[in-house]
Length: 353
Length: 257
Image (tube, rainbow over all chains, first blue to last red; front, side, top):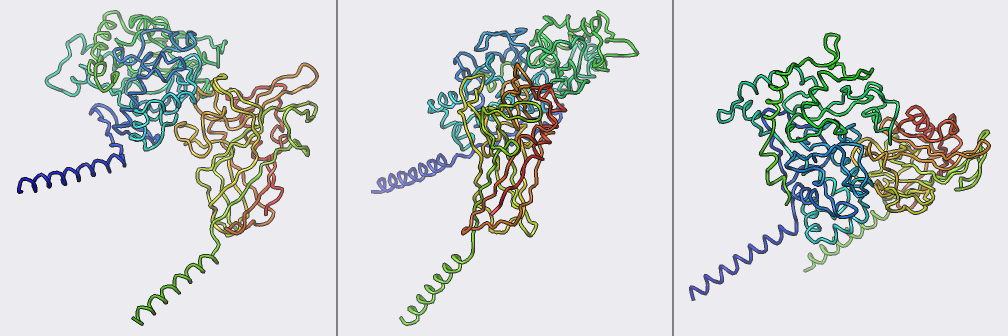
């Protein structure tokens, strides 16, 4: 009899538990996620009315790797943004979009996106990650996704219906697709390179003589643009790779930032990419014209082409270009290797689910 | 027992009284604003020839965002209509996303606003376009804002923002005719309009207001040389800003009641 009453108690109690769990399921509250800010980074500054939540980030990760987001259901965001290449693709100008057409711009890396608050795309034509996603998603040479079809495709997946509810307490919509993608991309924080461990004095981390000399040189010679520990000023510069802007190209693409700002100072200017993981992200420049880091350095020392909009930081003591000798170039390259973040390129939370 | 009966009766009387009171008090009401497009004194129609100045025009599209509508009370207080983004348009079918799908031919020239606090209203304010908060962030879709209606397009997509207004058609100064595409956009061209009503209009649960406006395309195109610049877009910054400014001077109130 006593045993029976015990069992009864257990049944009643577990019944209560089930009830509790059920009511939680009925009222899903996304769990806020606080982005870890590395001590050597500034605080990220952005307001897009899209607070990070665990559910939103996880949904964004699912979508980032989902080929349903393309018109032919063959490519995903990750097709041009490979984690092992710091979310670049290793190709100058890709042609894997749904039309097979070679694109006009090199796939940019996705590194420390929460700090990229001064425009996206090489010319900054998009203000934030939320708006930006509509570009590649719908552009007919890239993912070429009809947004009506996308809604049908996602709604056919029961897991997505639940995941959107959990993340936004709303149904599947294109606005929530881009919000989730933006949340996931803001978790792409790269701050665990050998350099980071050295500056944060973690576990006695050290750099060798060559690397330290390179670090000093980068601070002196490169941080005019590749500034702070983000190694970018998030600004736009004409770095002298071209000086003839007479041919506007499709949609004025050859004008660089000028096509967005209509300010002559921005003619031929493109966004400063970060130096982080740079040894993984060849080829370089907005059109991927330089295959190696040596070509990039040689450009800055020997090959800058003058035009009126050339960035003033590239004119020093009345001379065009940056003075770096061959030995110094080797030291700089040695240092750049220390900016490779193995954790970033292998972190499971950023990988394919 | 008697006490209880009295109490019940008293309570019932109170309830009845309350109900009666709410019936007397006027509640929020609605207003319909009509945006009638004109070409001078003629009605605006698609694919019809109009002579403006020395040129012959034919239009296949007139679309613009009306946003942040504010009703100004006779006492000076303002009622800002929440999430007020309306696409006013008369257009042939619009291919969207390079023709991935088609936005159907549409004529929409009125907006009905509900839940307006009871009162006498003397003026109307609204803006043409999309304010920067929403223009810069396509994931914030209030009112009728959407990527699906062709008021964003590929070359604009790379600015990932909205087209505030669009006029399409042809212009003819002798042969051959030129295709015109006159669009406005960009945050600096977000402009507002204030229109005083000829007399105050009453809004309440018993009385709906009706405000009739006109937009004169001749005034919209005033000083714009579409022979010289048949395409007006972001790269024609000066002309585009003039065009955006023109919209604010092209509305008139016909009646308000």
